[in-house]
Image 1 (cartoon, rainbow, N blue to C red):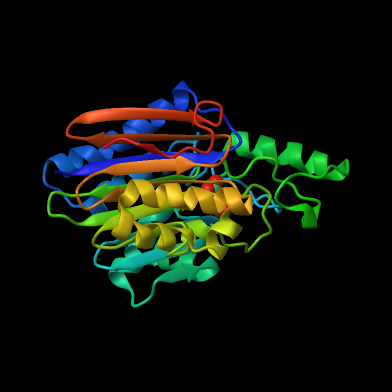
Image 2 (cartoon, rainbow, N blue to C red; image 1 turned 180 degrees about the horizontal axis):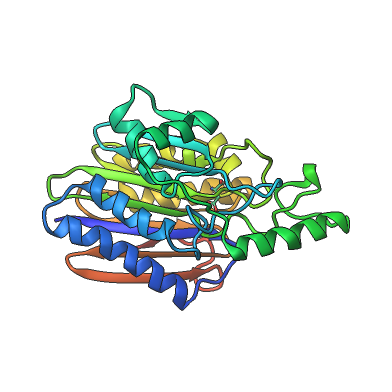
Amino acid sequence: MPSIIVHGGAGAYDPGAEHERGLVAAARAGWVILAEGGSAVDAAEAAVVVMEDDPLFNAGYGSSLTLAGAVECDASIMLSDYSAGGVAALRAAKNPIRAARLVMERTDHVLLAGAGADEFAGRMGLPAADLRSERRLRLHEENLAKLCAGEDLKFMPRIRGLADEMGIGTVGVAALDAGGTIAAATSTGGLMMKLPGRVGDGAVIGAGTYATPWAGVSATGHGEPIMRHALGKVAVGAAREMGIRQAIEMTLEIGLTHGFGFGIVGVEENGAVAHGFTTQGMSWVSIRDWRLETFLGTSETEPGAPGDSD
Ligand code: ASP
C-alpha cells in the first residue's frame, strides 16, 4: 500500500493554515500518482514542484536570498535502488527538483553545482525563472539593515550572522509506491543570508536526502550540522534495525545532544511514515490508506518529540 509524507521545513516559526493548505495540495499531487499505480519518483517530484511553485515555502519561487541578494537553490532526490541526483547553488531553473531528477536520470554524476548546473538545466529544456519573491526581497532589505546596524543574528556569527530564522519553509518528500520503490526528495533556497556559493544539506545525498530499499528520509533545518552528522544516512541506517519511528527518535537525540535544530520525515518499506523535529516549529502532511493527516508542530505541543502516523 503506497504512502507519502511531505514537509514544509523546520525552523523558528509556528505553522498555520496557509502551510497546511500548501502541504495538503503537495501531498495530494503525489498521492494521486501513487494511488493510480504511478511511481514514487513521479509522486515525489510532483509534490515538491507544488511547493517550489508556492512562494510560502523556501524552495523554488520564494527561496531565501544569499547575502548578495540572489537565489541559489539546492535540491536532491534518491530512490531505493541507490540512484540519486542533486543540484547545488542553482540560480535560474524554475523547479530545481526537476533538475536534480535529470542529473539522476540523464548523467553519470550525482551532483551538479553553480553555473554548470544552470547550463545543464537549460539544455535539458527546463524553464528558467526569476525566483526572488517580493517577500524575500523585503526580508533581504530588512536583514541588510540589521547587518548595517551591527546586529548579530543566529547561525552565522562569523558574518555578523544574518539568519535569525533558518531557511524556514524548505520542502521535502518521502514516498513509497505500490511496487515497493521508495523515493526521498528535498528542495530548498537554503539559509537566509548565506554566503554566495554556500551549499547545504538539501543538495547532499546522505545529509538532507537518503533512500534505500527499506527506508527513505528528507531532512530540513540547520544544514551544516545535518551534513556533519550525515543525518539522512544515519536515520536510514538505523531504520533497518529499529524501524523508521525509532530511527527518527534516535536522530532527535543527536540533534538535542549536539544542540542543533532540524526536522526530518521518513517512510519505510511497509508504508509507515514518521517525523520529528528539534526546532520551534515544523509542518508536514501524510497520506496513507486514503487517510490524510496534517501536523502543524510547535515545540510547545511536541518539545523535541518524534511523531508517527502509521
Ligand atoms: N537545511 C537547509 C539548509 O541548511 C535549510 C532548511 O532546511 O530550512 O540549506
